[in-house]
Image (tube, rainbow, N blue to C red; front, top):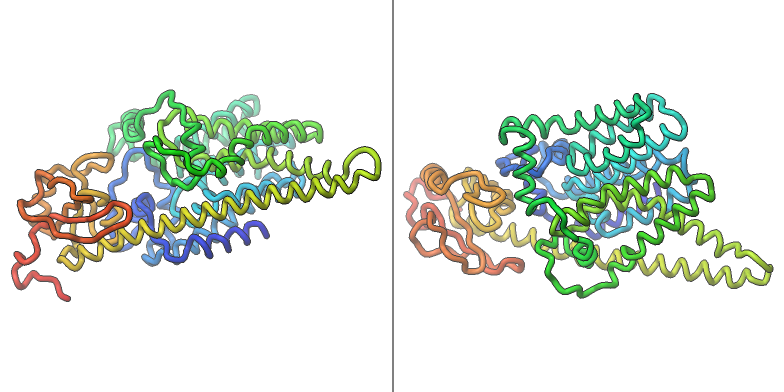
Length: 482
């Protein structure tokens, strides 16, 4: 609880001030009610995050209120997920694992974000803990309900993560019919909204999976290990990831992770906790497979479920190292050397924490700058008569439309939801803008008038807009007020 409280305080101090909703967040939040039209919901997405934010998003459009709600909720979920393991692992191991996971910059950054990955991580941790308890202690009602509910949460948030989570857990429980059935029920319950939507809009789950694969660049053998390592320097999305690796020091802990996890598995086996740690390690590796070897881009948040589970064997290793350093074997005179080993271990962990906070600060500043750009373009659109009800298309139309209170309609790409003719037809009914960034060419369906300068942004340069109708051509009675 103390670890969770500190991490929530860090989020409120470093992430919340000046923050706005990111691109993906605007899609999820717009589905949950409020005054902003729902953005196009593409094939890879799932509704879990929208359900999560609905209690706040339906009542207020305040980003601060949403951030505080999610930060507090994620702190409570962190405590609950690790507490599932309390009967299997010592408290010192769980506290160490919680601190290691919760102080990673992706966990701190996404703790208050309307994104699914942290919730998948905590759900996967809880589900694996319930299964481990059932395998080692017997499957009671709490284990059955807990495992099924946790798997359902993960699938509801990200169906692909839910499938990779369920795979090792179903294999382990294949000879335990009650737990196997509970996991299968949770898998189906969590996937139900996604499946229903697949039949309603895509012609079935297989067609939706095919479309999701296209949007994600195709699923197949793609070595993304180096991309994930490079992204740890502070890139929330590395697509494509053909970039120079300027801060390799930010990935030192990541490169040590396999060795620490292996050492923890050995230490846990000697302490009689090998089965629980082996299940956590195997499930964590299963969740890491698609993001290391099956997609061609990287984002640190993708591996949060793997990090949550691998924090347990790593904590076993560090606790073992601490115990050996504090009580070195051999002559009593070696206690001084033991103290220096403890100091060295503490210094390494402190340096790791400093690096994580530095990256968090840099990522938060970049995120705040991006959301400020979105808000600046939206404000410029309002000044030029593009006010709700309205439609926005073009460069980064999805988040900018959310900030402007408009509907976003793209004529092509991942969020394609309207034809050029349909967009022109919509412009006859409501104010419409087609956005162009960095002096790009005029879309063929945009009006044949000079573009209107909107804003100079840090991320995409100059933003201009082709407006339907252009400023100055509106009838007097239709002009917006000041």
